[in-house]
Length: 158
Image (cartoon, rainbow, N blue to C red):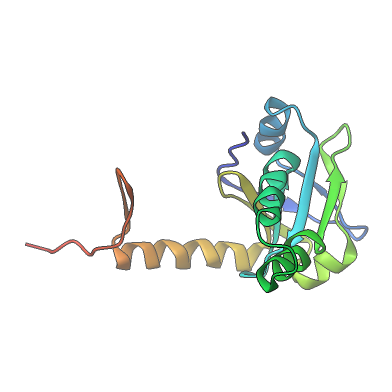
């Protein structure tokens, strides 16, 4: 299973080419895959990238839903139909589709945010602002991970 961690800067050229950061390529190599599935996030202005095996887990979960249900239709249209499967070349580069670049409002400077089993590609300024805002919210909420899950109960200050 891939574990993408860290924040890495990069460039997007006029043809839509990017170079996936070396630590992320190493994770893909360790997982014996060079295929990634890309989609524009439905929650943030960025492109999400998952290895093909991780994406298959999402597809499997969607296929567990009842046929013809509204939930299944929405998820199929949003998560499957809106995705692109791309393969890294020998140098760890790929070409992002123009429609994904436009929808995520990417510029020539991008930032890659590792998010565990996926990574996100953001316009650099927007991505850095997202990280700072997330840190601030986590501090305000005093988020911690309990042994059994997320703990959102604010700690009292003595």
